[in-house]
Each structure stands twice: as C-alpha cells, then as structure tokens.
Image 1 (spheres, rainbow, N blue to C red):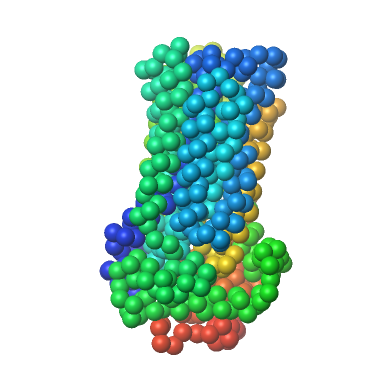
Image 2 (tube, rainbow, N blue to C red; image 1 turned 180 degrees about the vertical axis):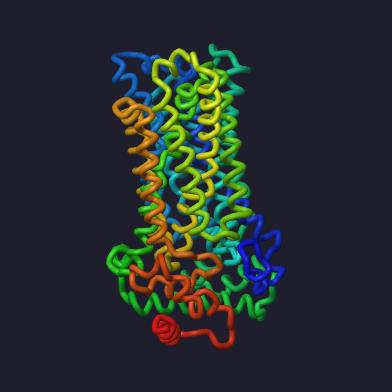
Length: 544
C-alpha cells in the first residue's frame, strides 16, 4: 500500500482511540527517558567544574590514576545503581503494577539527588545519593517502555513507544545547556555553579511523581493480576469507547486468551520458572537474543562514546576553545533530540523496524567511516597545530558535520529499536522480566563502554577507534538482515505466531509466512483463531 500510506493501517482503529487520554499517558511515561539523558549530560560537566573541585578537594589529591579513579566512581555510580534498578523494576512491575512502579522510581530518583545537592563537601554522600538515584533511573528503562507498549494501539505503537527513546535526548539537551549556562553565568567560587544544573533532576522527578496520579494502570497488567472488571473499565477510558464496542472486546479477548495459554503451559511455575521459560523455550530465547544483541551492537557502534566524550572529539576535529566545545555539544544535543522525535513520529511506523534500522545504521556507518578516514589522512601533527590547508579545513568541517549525521543515524536506527523491540516482542507475563534483564545488561554494557573508550583511544588512536566502530556497524547490518523480524502493525498477542517459526526463518521470512495468521488475525471479533487454528494456518502458509 506504500510506505507512507497510514490510512490502511489506521482503517481498523476507531478515531476515538486516538484521544487525549492516550496521549497524556504517553507523555507522562514517555518523558521518563529524560532521566538517563540528564545524568549522562550533567555529570561530566559537574566533575569538571572548579566549584565542584573546590568543595571536594579529594578529587584532586593523590596520583593521576587515583584522581581518575575517584572521578570515575562519581560519574559511574548512577550506572551501577541502574543495574540493580533494572532488576528491581521486574519485581515491582509484576507485583504492584506499572503506575505504582513509576511512583516508586520517582521517589528513589528524587531522594537520591536531594542527597547529592545537600552533600556540602561529603564525597561519600555524593556517591550514596547517586547510587540511590541510579536505582530509580534504572527502573525507568523498564517501566516506561512496558507501560507505553501495553497502552498503545498497534497502528502507532512504534511512534508512542519511541517517545521514551526521544526523551533521552531531551534530557541530554537540557543537561548540555544547563552546564553551559552555569559555567558562563555563575561564579566558580560558588557551589551553586555545580548544584544549579543538578536541580533539573529534582524538577523532573518531582513533576513526574505528581503527574503519576493522573494516569491509569494498563489493562494488560490488571488482567494478569485477576482484576478483569477494572481492566475493562480502564481500557474503555483509555480508548474512549463503550464496553461492548468490537475494538474493546477484541483487545480484552486477545489478552485473556494469551494469558490462558501461558498459564496452561506454565502451570505451577515459580519466579525462577519464568527465568527458565525465558532462556529455555526457543521462541522466548530468540526474543531475548534480539534484546541482548541490539544492546551490544548499538552500544559499541560509537554513539554512546560520542555522546559522553563529545567535547573531546570536537577538540580533535578543531573545536579547541572551552566555550566553543561546550556550544558544539549543545548543538549535538539539539540534533539528537530532533532526530529522535522525527524518527518516532514520522519514520518508525512508516518504514517499519527493519527499514529504519537499515537506514539508520547505514547512515551512522558512512558518517563514522568518513571521520576515521579523515583522521587517518590528515597527520596528527597537523591536527594538533591546526595549520590546515584550505582543502583540509573543508574536510574538517565535513568531519564535524559527520558527528551530527552519526547522531541522526543512531536516533533512527539503534536508539529507536533497542527500547521498542525490548518492550513489544515478549509475552505479557515475561515482558517485565525480559525487559529488566536486557536493561540490566544495557547498563553493565554502558558501564564497560564508558570505562573502555579512554583506553581504546589511547591504544588505538582516535582514527582506529572510529574504524572499530565502523566494523561494528557492518556487523550490525548483517545481524539485522538475518535475525530481525518486521513487527510493524502486528498486535502484541500475535507475536507468538511469528516466533513459533523455525529460528532461521523468523528474521528473513517471518512477516511473509505469518501475514495471513499473525498480523491481522485478531481483528475479527466473533471468530478469532484459537492457538490450534493459528498453527494450522501457519503450516498452510509455509507449505505454499
């Protein structure tokens, strides 16, 4: 029907479904992504400010290695807390629900940074506060996407879920401008210079805690916990449709049937039984692999390193002044924010998951490869002295533009995919567990990446590092081509049909083989397929 033809996919979605309640809930949970971006953008500026070093003289005591270790401890403490927070989210999401989990993480996030800004020279209090805040920040990566994917209509699920991914760069942009503004307008002799930007955390966490009381729990969680009447009531409110409307009846029936099948298959299993399901059942193991590999390939493609060490890379490419470097990072934050929301609103549900990944990774690869070639061709001595010829200056400008272009490619590709696939492919009873483990791996991987990049730059050189990232991008393209299925327009409950295929067919031929019994089978209310009938249809399609 054409990539940009949305009428076909929205034809089965009543206009009442796209209402203010849906968009308000999406805003509240989508803005959670800003927590990670705020910390990634703020902490580097905080430890580099003279006011922070003056208040915490221990940061500049001892050998260079000792100083670097202290700085690393401060910057990475939120990431360490986030590892535990991602696992904690699984326990809370399935125990108290998505909305109560949002409130719990906001309390942790808020408390942590209140402890930070009231430290008054106590470095141990800084570390403790950042770890506590990290528990809440780690929970956001599970709670936010899980809620969004469970309330979004499937026709615009990608768009609504990726609002969370875009919010990461809202946080990054706010952080970059906060550091820049504080360094220019506040005296370095005042502790307010490093404290003022940190209050952005308190503002975001407090606001979201208040707004959390204005949204309703997801119908899928309520059905899973046995609250069927409340689930129907919440779904009617969310969709703005009466209880007897076919769209509501179909959605409720889909969730109930899937949960019944899961209960029959896993009768009597414990929480550890869920973990065995995740790693031992082939269809679930394939979904788990998608989440883990998207995190691994995405993190090492260079985008995370560029975000954290942006000022250093801009300095290598010729932006040497302190104000000039900080302003260049601010522009990078704006580019990533605009790119992320452009992809969320106009690309991920138009092009689909696979096409968006292909285009995003390809764009990122070309941009990073150009930077690597530029740094190889131009001698290091010339880069250090900045005595560039006219052609080299033009090439340097293109290299700086490539930094921004790589950010757009990342937003379109890995950044959009890593949260969406992690939230939408799992069965409802394994969604919180699968998301928690994958996001725990995300923070472990990010922690390792942050620690490794300085050493890689030292041993491999900046050009070698970018060549390494180019190779990872190529591996990512090959992995997407073979393993990643297209899930655009498919209901959450019909994912089981897709992942019941042989593993070597899911990525390459999954959509084609299940188009008659997976993506749209749940649109018929009166005669929905049972699991047995779906399998018969699937075998018929495969035989064709």
